[in-house]
Amino acid sequence: MKPEQRLVDVQCSECGRVWQVDLAQVGRDAQLIYRGEESAKVRVECPVCHKYRIVEVPQRWLS
Ligand SMILES: [Zn+2]
Image 1: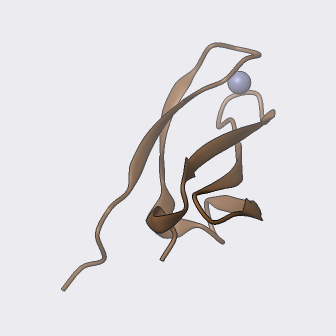
Image 2: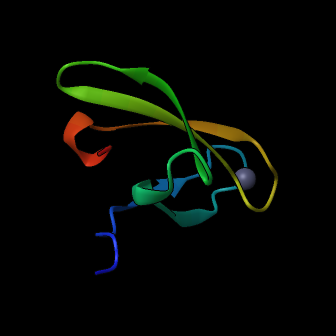
């Protein structure tokens, strides 16, 4: 069985690009920077201008 996808839309504050990050790939496409009881924060990189964005997601999405 394929792992469940956890796609979130992220918009870059620099260039306005919107792209999708699959939170099933945290550790590869996204870097975990904070993990709390309810929520977690991951850092993702804009594919266009390579600025970093912090995205807050439900902690349970990170299995
Ligand atoms: Zn950008």
